[in-house]
Structures are given as C-alpha cells and as structure tokens.
Length: 177
Image (tube, rainbow, N blue to C red; front, top):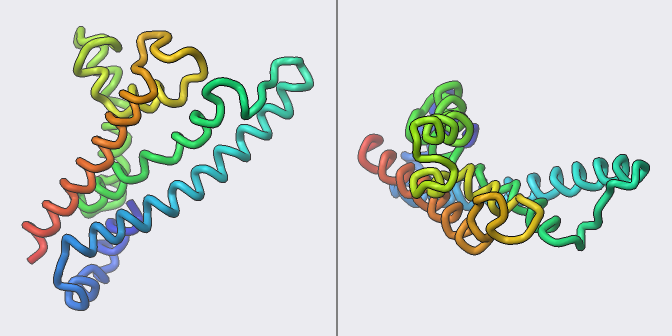
C-alpha cells in the first residue's frame, strides 16, 4: 500500500508517470517488486514466528515440526495478501483509505457474508481471499472444517491477487492520464 498511496500523498507519482508514461507497466512493476519483497519478508516473519512459537510449545509437549502435514504451506501462504494492499493503494490513493479497504476485504467482509446466510461453505464465502487463505494455512487433512482443498484455495488466492493488480492497473491507466 505504501508503494502506491505514499507516492500519491507526496506527489512523486507525477514524476514517476512523467518518467515512465506507460502507467500500466509502472503498476505491474511495483506489484512485482511488492510481491517479491512481501513474500520474502512474510516468509522470514512466518518462519520466525513458527520457530518461536514451536520452541515455546515444545516445552509443553505440544510442538510440531515444519515437516508435519501442512506446516510449511501455512508458513509460506501468510505472505500473499500484500498484492490486495497494493491494489487498494492504487485505487484509493490515500493510505488510511487503502488500509481500511484492504482490512474491509480481508477481515470484515467474510463475517458479513457469513452472517448474511451464505455461510463458510457457500459459494460466495468460498470465493473470498480470507477463506482461501484459511484453507491453505490450515494444518490438517485437505477439505477438513469446510475449507477448500489446498489446490482450490491456491487458485482462489491467486485469482484475487491477479484481479487486484488488474484493477489497480486499470484504475491508474484510466484515471491518471
């Protein structure tokens, strides 16, 4: 979010777009950089959190290994939702609004859909990024607890990330000419 919304707030987006008139390429390049950095930082943070928590749980006999079913996948998948944030920053162009938009999509929308009767297993609820993330991050047999299989969840999460970047590119190309 900061890579796009911060640039609009400081006014340096004008300089960027004068230097590189192909606005779609600018947003795509930013999304690629954010994806790489977010995946690296997210993976480092997730591995550190996993190692720290498991060291504490091991003392109680509750720890697990990174080699246990689904543990590595849960650690890696926690880094993917940054692309939704960059799209929110590009569309909203204000940091606080971008944070609110990303939190709304990732945190507030799933319970609203669930309380509206679609439920966790409903088609609308299953198409949400949070539901897909939980399907990937869940440690247990595939499909347990009403969550999608890892393959389906990966496709849904990838579609949200790609769709968010496409919306950001479209918004910037149309609006910022």
